[in-house]
Each structure stands twice: as C-alpha cells, then as structure tokens.
Length: 210
Image (spheres, rainbow, N blue to C red):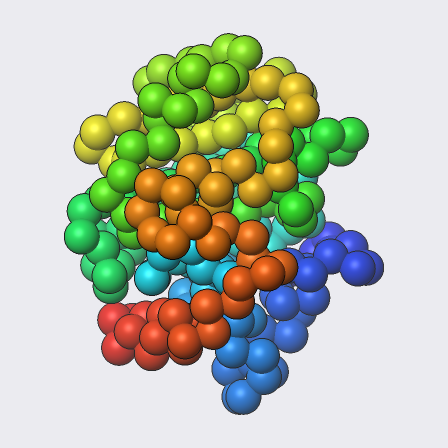
C-alpha cells in the first residue's frame, strides 16, 4: 500500500512522509516506533502520561470511521499484537480517538485519523457517559465503518470495554484532558507542555521493545 493520499499542511502527513529521515536523527517526536502497511506508531506530541503514543493512518482521512474495513481489521490485528508488549503499561492501555468529519473536527486538533494509546489505569468512560449526547456500547474498531458521518469519541480497553460516544461540539483535546486530569498533573495541552523527556524515554523503550 502506498502512503498516498497526503495533504499539504497536515503535520501527520508530513511526519509520515519524513519518517525515514527522522529515524536518522530528525525531530524526536516524529520518530516512527512501529509500522504496518496502513499505520505508523509515533510518540504523542506533548504526551499526557509516560508512554503515550499515537497510531496514525498513512492515508489522510478524517477518522477511523472513514477507513476501509481492511484497514480497520489491520489496525485491530496491530493492536492485538502490540498492546500486551507496550512498555510503561501498568494495565491494558486505553485506546481512544476523536472521530472527526470533513466539517467537524470532533475535538481533534489535527484532522487526520489517529488513535491515542494511553498507558493509564484511569476511568474516563463515566465522564463521557455523563456529557455526550449518545452512547453506543460494545462497538469495536471494525464497527466504526458503519457509523453515520458525525463526530464521535471512541474509547476501548481490550478485554474490558469498548464505547462510542456521539455529539456535536466536542471540546478540543477532550480525551487528553480527561486522562491527564485523572492520571497526572493536569497538563494536557500539547501546545503548552512538551514533556520532552517523556518523548525521549518513549522512543528509547519502544526501540528496545521492537
């Protein structure tokens, strides 16, 4: 599979296009940690907990719900393989996505399909249940392809739960905020807190892992 299409000005498209350069000493936060035919794992920019990474689609699409069934099945297989081997994980990590559309960012600061992996033993589901317009339980990653074209939040902890929450006007960085408030120092905004030492540690530990 090729890495196209990409979009000018998209930071994830740029990181994917330059990932081999970053392996040779480019921006540490754009270091590719793992790659499959359709996805690249990168350190999260401004991680909210140690070990926070993102799984990014090579195709420029607004959300996982806009990926193909083949791509979604590939992601599920990737997660099944990597999640038990993640460094930092005190429990099964939380997988979470801001599902954007072409006209609503759905809380994402970058409208390009990417799944957060938060190695944090915290509960954010109860907060989402109390604020979102619609909750769908038991939906898995491959079920996202059947969702209507509207903004959503997907949250999963393998072997425990899987939920989709739908609403309009989802706050920017909502998932980061919930995880950070529950697990760490409340510094959730990647534009204000880089946690550079955490990023370096993520790269080091993933390189040892893979």
